[in-house]
Image (cartoon, rainbow, N blue to C red; front, side, top):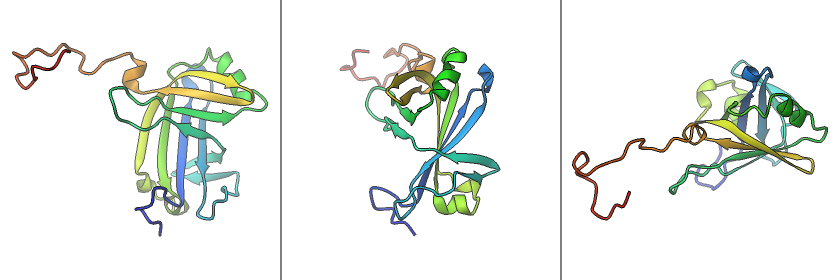
Length: 169
């Protein structure tokens, strides 16, 4: 049983669903994980909740929320043959393609326990960048992608008496 008080949890698996079907592409299901012993998953794919995930090494960054700005997450994947880059270019960059990130424990994947998903985050593809053999997908939250600010109305003191006098917005 993993020790949940540690900064990292042993057996944590990150699943990503990248859907480009609205642009004439396909749905991609990837898993990025390390097992308890630090080794990568040995098999090249596994089935969880009726979906086959391909184990694929990628780096995710920028998911931490907090502060005044929404998180600016990104996924960096190796693209040695340029296949994903070519597909994205054929789809016009696929702006707004939905990307969903799930977090689940390895024991729930092994037991095919769909209720074991404890985190689901929804984003859209904002843009992509290529550097050497790596492709970085920059994601945006639904509000950030739509260029929406919350709240979308101007808050006045007579309608919202709780606003302090020190507020300048």
